[in-house]
Length: 176
Image (cartoon, rainbow, N blue to C red; front, side):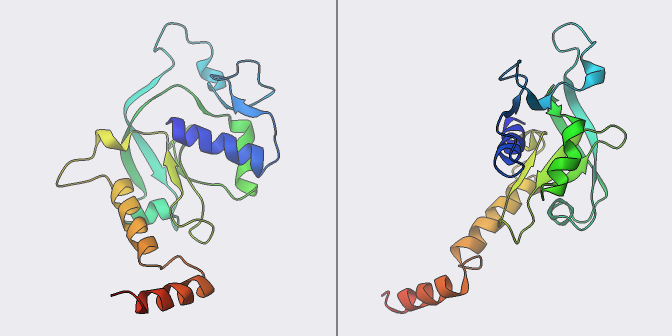
């Protein structure tokens, strides 16, 4: 979940030009807390009371990379353990700037999966969930198999620019 949150902060700072974007967990006095406890959770007291724990449904947006990874499923179940979320007031700004929130809570404005389109990055996807908790040796979680597949495509030069692939092909012809 922290990787997802840091990706949102980085995107807000460097793409949306919110130089002071941060998480209220890291900087409680941040003027642009793009990652925060949801407003309705702030009233909950007691350690863990406002934490999202366990299995939760996630609606997947059709036509996204997440949809592809999860076999076109419109709803999946993932396991969570976090309390900080994307502040809903920043969702529209981040989306207009090109960040894709491809997995969301079915009812509440809680973003669960983010991605960049494949034409921007070969494999940029993050989640608030912990996919390691549902991955099994003979049934790995799709986000892991997707990462391995993207790495294999990169190694094969499928993401290189045309001029890069020409030089790679020339180099390959000189290898024993």
